[in-house]
Length: 393
Image (cartoon, rainbow, N blue to C red; front, side, top):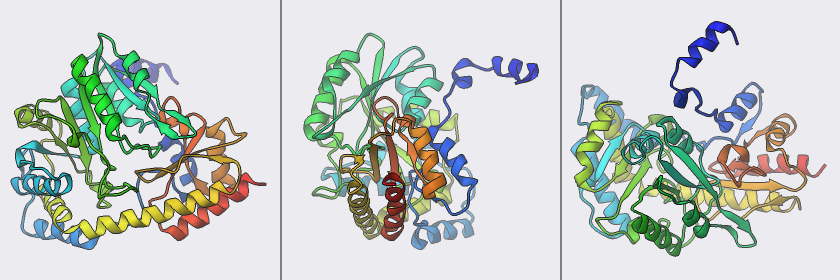
């Protein structure tokens, strides 16, 4: 580092300068430089956005829908979200409860900006997607990681640990369920216990339920805070079009919140992106209205790939994991491997398969690696056989 570079960096806000590097991106950079690597490191599948969604955006572009638009989202998309949620959760939703954002990540940033002042603390059950903790630090708040338990019953929530972590600085419980990367999914009892803590201590809950449809038990979706909350509860829901409809590159999400918070959310959208492109929102409407069979197919495909991965890696005798209840990741430890950075690089080099190191996901994940199985089952079978061959040499 040169003196000039050092001086420039020191002149930045410390919260921005000290934002952590992504351990997921780090291994992706390592593996992308090699040919023939099957990259299962990122949280997306191999299916492009389906044509019926793309065509809606194309029609809107051709119609000249390229101007500034509604900050909260065009009314038709907000109404489509309300209709979709009404059908999925079995209770009435209003369009006034939904606010369209430029990605699920922006939804998280806005939710944190609304609830976590500088110097406050945000409790995050981990292992968890690292962006929530990173976004917390950037705004000057502090992420407090409380690890899930991993044992014979798989991954379980540490309610007592979360309760013990609450203090006068705590403002938010950030809960990802179904979980990226573990596949742990909160039960109704878990959700009730978390909501009770939030009510007792006057905390906000930011509920990241973006994998709710990737649920491998009975029903069309995972248990939700929507099932147990009252209208006055302090809960912000963050979500995205990325996973269900294979729209990761579109960068479009939403916040679900009480209508009384609408002007605040609108203002924060205005002062960041000033809204989502209208032609993209037209695509979102079609995804919600016509995409149910597509989502069902994607979930069934992921379930098949999950079972293949668990079977092949389980037979190595070295891999320890809980069969994921939800989401589309297998989070597994390898007996005898204590450095997951080295392990993921070794798998790139020797198996030509890219996985994410568990160190990227916070406390409790250090001994694990994450494999995204939202792929063609044949590709998952091939990749897992190559991993198994390396691990059993």
